[in-house]
Image 1 (spheres, rainbow, N blue to C red):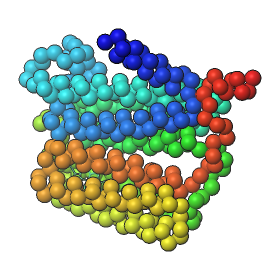
Image 2: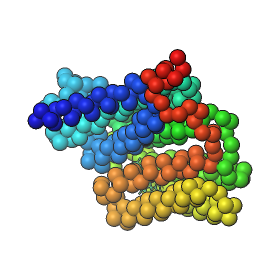
Image 3: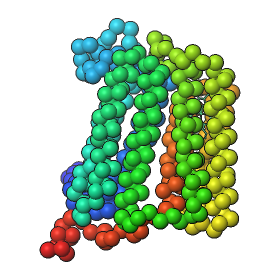
Image 4: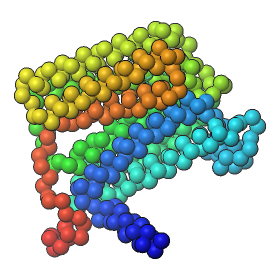
Length: 329
Ligand code: HEM
């Protein structure tokens, strides 16, 4: 037992060191953690919806009118309350990682303004999401508010990914690693994926998984919105295929070619899940898997686009704050 406690203590000190005395490597790891927790909360948020727990805590910021934590309330089932409350608690984990990203970016020496600016987006964005979550509950899960809630998370994932990518490179002016037109194709692909995500949330807002029977729905014809959503899937897959072909014939760096291939594979897998869930009548588990897949498609797209350019190597070796101060004394 004592050995275990010692071990935990040592790990806690090490972890604290990565925050208070960061190196470019630890900043990068915390940024990656931010990508993961932001992606994770989109999946747990979808789990709230598909289990009909959207109004499990019917008020905000309190869970029930008289209590910040779950307490017996009218007809609300304890399980729905636990699921919705669990998702609210996850916000604190996402916020903690966001604050750590900010602290590491601010404590990194030499200070890099780009990283600090990107890191600020995390806590500000998570706080905005927490307030927006309140609007989602108070609007009784209006589909516009639910859709925007998801899309803000995709923005936070993009900002966290940018922090991750920027923390592993220098501050030289951006230099293309692929032909100019391929880079333009990459931007067009990113825009198309974002529109695909928007089309996806419109399908969700029209479909049966509202999160609670009291929630309103978009009054669109479900077949038509699904068709528009899948049309964008074809556009995205087509653009990705074109990108993959282009990076191969122009001899782009191997890691760019591999990243484009990974993106295509993830898109095809996600498309497969999309069709299966549609033809099976959108079962809850597959819908949640589809949300996970959509964030993976988004992350893999950002990855390819960031890999197509370079800002040069890091100017300083990966020293921590104390070593930096000693060297520069
Ligand atoms: C690269 C491929 C795809 C991506 C990135 C994608 C993305 C998304 C996103 C972001 C959502 C909204 C999730 C939410 O707000 O909870 C969604 C919902 C949906 N997608 Fe896709 N999708 C893809 C392919 C497909 C395909 C091929 C189909 C086949 C019909 C499909 C069918 C659906 C359906 C039925 C929903 C609504 C599920 C519900 O009722 O909640 N998707 N998709």
